[in-house]
Amino acid sequence: MNVPVSYHYCSLDTACAILGTGSLRLSDITKSNDSSEIAYGYAAAIRSLIRCGLVREEGSRVHFLEDWIGLLRPDYRTMLADAITNRTQPPNRLCYAICFSEHHDLLSQWRAYGDDGRGVALGFDLSAMESMPPTIGMGDRSGGPLEQHAMVLYEPIVYGKDRTAALFDGLADDIRVRVERLRHCMAEEGPLARDALLEATLLFVTHTAFCKKRFFREEREWRLALWGPRSRVTPRQAALSASLCKEGSPWLRSATFRVLARGDRLVPVVDLGMDMRTILREIVIGPRCRADESDLALLLEPLGLEGIRIRRSAGTYQR
Image (cartoon, rainbow, N blue to C red; front, side, top):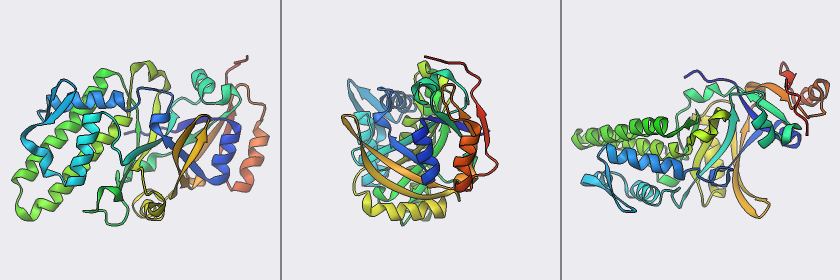
């Protein structure tokens, strides 16, 4: 996959916080501006499982066929059954995400996320994510309980029913193939085959956060998502940070979970510490932003961020 430089539109305050702390903040995806997040993905996911012969639907209930789900460990079995039946994130899981756009100068992005044009767009090269294993084990990567596993994905959003169906048809078929391999493998191959099936089910559920209605296709969004724990996060922070450094890309350094107040809501977030010198490529100044190139150069210099391209939006947007 050709991974482009992608742009995170934000206010000047947020940009200064990102650069100053060297971290990107991922938020609970269910608190996003799209009310159908996750639910849209699960609707498509269930239809793919039905077409693949893994489940059947009776009214509002979903039943797993041939008891293949019994091949999973109990904690994974409960996770998948809860997720598919309730069409939402499992009770002990949260999807934390941050969004980017392939477009460096898009009016709708400035309006919605770039402080109505007064902010900036930070351009990041996150292509190193391609070589990162999606499953991150906090402690024992293989065979550990579900709570010790996280998934980190950086992928483009899939828009519309047809492309979403194709995505989940492929993921569902991968589950089916791995089920058959587990059923017919030799006894000594069982643990590896079971781990492969567990990872396939995790990938299937996680991708419900990577599809949206065609209405949003103008955004050309990429998403960095961490699918991780919802409870007892404090004692797992050190383990997850260590695993990110060990198994993840070298510019991923830490993970800090917290809960923030935003208006009338409390929003779970995770701050991923990163080496900005490795991933930051460009800053685009918004059409209504009064900061200039020299201001940003002064901001970057003491942070050791050199060689960063700085340019202004080509827009003449005014209010």
